[in-house]
Length: 220
Image (cartoon, rainbow, N blue to C red; front, side, top):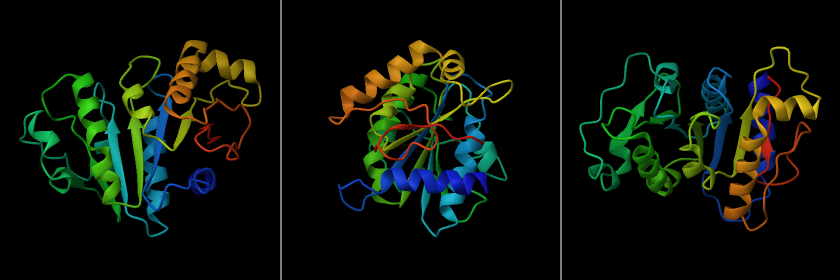
């Protein structure tokens, strides 16, 4: 039920978009590894697929990729392509089946290239991915440890921020900012404002669906 609630909050935040019927993009981020970001990504995608939508989960964590293990019954087959080939191959050929109905996986982590290059190629393929599905959910790298997430941030309609709730008072803005890291929060806000004319902000309240492309923190 928590993930269905999150699905509803995300859908409400995206309802006011007026740029056509294209697939909406949700980026799931966290400050550190182990906060539950990948679990949220997998379960949110499954919750969206329950409504009959075709969902593509995009891996954006190329340093410690784990989303494939959450979504597939067997290890995915390594992609037999070079980095240059990945930019021109039909995107459907790069999709992988998952064990969840209506959910496909786009994951370039098996290709031998730097995390930065893989993130940039993934960003370049996002328009093609958006055209073939109804919703996209991206599992990002921890923003407190890597910078690759910033290549994907500008493509997101909604950003879901995941924090660990161990000893965390979710209603205390000071604890929230200390846990997430003021530099990370500032960087996310700066990047949102630079890519989105209407700007973006980190909202401490939950839910925060009233401003499109805000950062939404799930209480799971």
